[in-house]
Length: 292
Image (cartoon, rainbow, N blue to C red; front, side, top):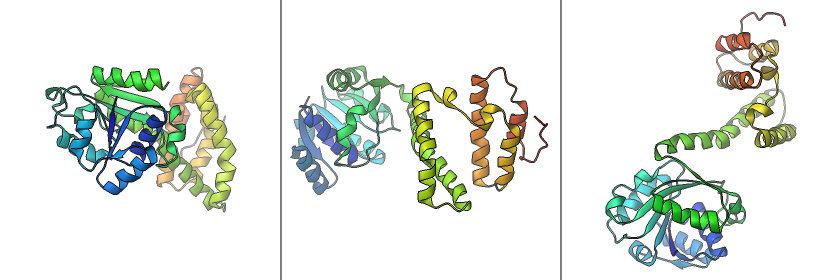
């Protein structure tokens, strides 16, 4: 492979550095600005291309690592060039390989790839990229070549996806990453009302969050769950609801999350009857709950 990268942001720079350090041939970078391409090229020990045509001609494999909104534009720019026999990949979590409209007429093969990885910094993220899972879909020829490089040669686990499921997959990833951050933030807001500082709330939650995530990853969400919903402690959940401003966003979040917890609890404890818990969460939080 002779890989050319279009886009010199966090993803492109990380991939270029990671692959070059593992002996993969990287031609260099083309970017919207020569300055960003030059920085990425210097960091990875590769070349700067000031013309897209030159990068395409010099490469048998193209990695499009631009923001999602630019991928279709990049494809439109290169679709009319000599692509026969080339491999084209983009690295968007939300867009499928269908963005390569008409690729079958160019003689190229394309696929979309999403590294399940947090690209936090352009110049350091490559150090732990070996831990990334890669989710891919697209043309079989492109997928086999990608698996040969990242799977067989570099040892990554590669999971396949259907193109029509790409947006659903991306929504799941967003919930698992930023959704968790939103939940943590809401928890901090509640503690702020109790008089805790932001730093104190982080320190207080740290053991709880770390232990929960460890249990989740080791045993799965259903097995790891604890708390009043799992115990079917309707009175405590009712008291929680009474303590929250009725109709507020945090109240709605609590009800929605507890409703999901009920579904999980029913799987974990099929012998328990969660009728009153579901009734409480589906109501206003003011219902009279039977004594338990």
